[in-house]
Image (tube, rainbow, N blue to C red; front, side, top):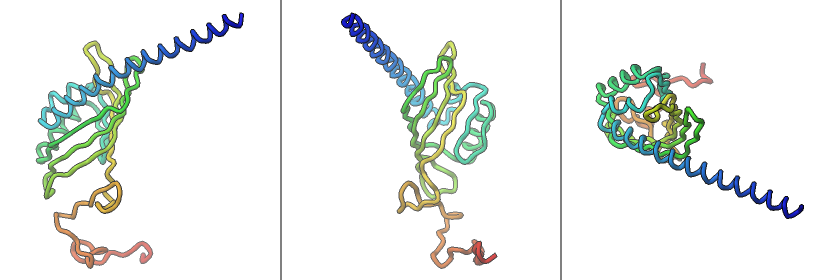
Length: 197
């Protein structure tokens, strides 16, 4: 009887291990699939190919970008992309890295990181950024499309380049403020501190 119990416990443990390995194999396949789509999306962003980029989004997408209001639907997303391009902003380098994918049947939840370099009108040189994102991919007969996404930067604009985790904030109208001008408005008027009110 003891031998039977040991054999049964061993069989259950082995089945659980095989099941976990099978799930890991499926997860790896999904991660590779999502990573391949991310690579194609990054290429579309660099080429400013809005039509190609939008083929990876559900028409009812909800996007929550950094430093910007929520975007509802693909039409609004297209308008925002075109508006940014018309202003002269351009992504020159982009990489999205899939860190993990959880499969919930009709949807996948992806967590990833990104890095990018942009040319922004009015800036003296290229601007780099890096951060993280979460994307919910909806399953269709022909593949997956993003239903919801949120992303935000790791770069704190309030921390100088000499500090950790940030870069030097851009000067106002490309003019550096001299140390003696700190605490003053652009017109030279002295700002009052909160305890001088």
